[in-house]
Image 1 (cartoon, helix red, strand yellow):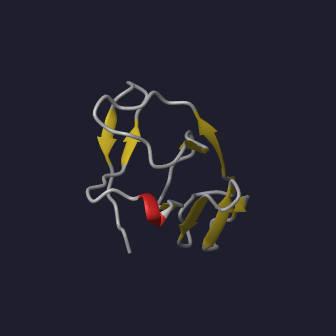
Image 2 (cartoon, one colour; image 1 turned 180 degrees about the vertical axis):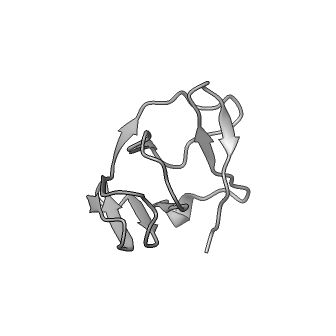
Image 3 (cartoon, rainbow, N blue to C red; image 1 turned 120 degrees about the vertical axis):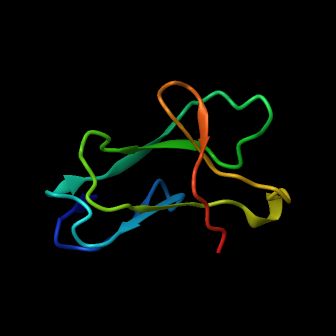
Length: 100
């Protein structure tokens, strides 16, 4: 999906498993956004509630934060849940989460 700098955007990717949105001027120039599922080893003391995804492009600077929503099945959510991102050094880091 193409995002223009002067436009807000609301993009559904991978059969609506990912929703990406952002305000005007999130990017400095017109950019193409895409995502694909990736294979990542499960953490030692945890489990995945969805597939892992890589959102691209990763070389284009962001002027503002984007919002990323991942579809989860509400019937299988554990009592305690955290969302992490996976960095290139192969470690899991806690992300900000909002369960509204």
